[in-house]
Image (cartoon, rainbow over all chains, first blue to last red):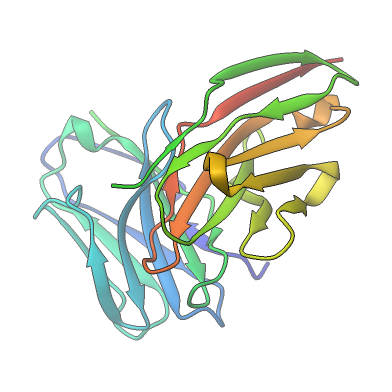
Length: 112
Length: 113
């Protein structure tokens, strides 16, 4: 399968714990995006990378959130000191510049 | 700020009925437009897209959408739906000067056999 992959698919954690998600984009794509989707809403943009450079961050991305793409390939999204409001589906997408974004299956986070 | 409105949150149709889902966006500049679909248990998939050219675009599975610039609309249509079209449909817009997709809230379509 050469699509976008995400790991884990589901994560249950207790409030206050740290969690990290991984995204592997389509290999030729140099752009990688993170979105968050809550129940009844469409995905909301969090941040994006071109190669290893993080070029834009949404105001939704509080200082508890950090994303990296150290070698311009896979990316990680870390949430520190999780809160119940962080419960959501975290989606990753990749693309060529200015082209269609292709989405992965998402990581569903539940914070108890 | 850009926003996308999808007028129908839930739609229920019988098989063979015609479908039209509304999508309006608020941005006066040049945009690229998308419809994504999420089938039950699956991830978001591209249904169709408009970048430029013919404002009537055709996508997979018999879907089409028409871009009407004067109305800031990009409505999705299908002349005859099937049970397998049961899914959630998202309209999305990207300003060609920026990178982030802005999504509508989605429309849940249920097609009864």
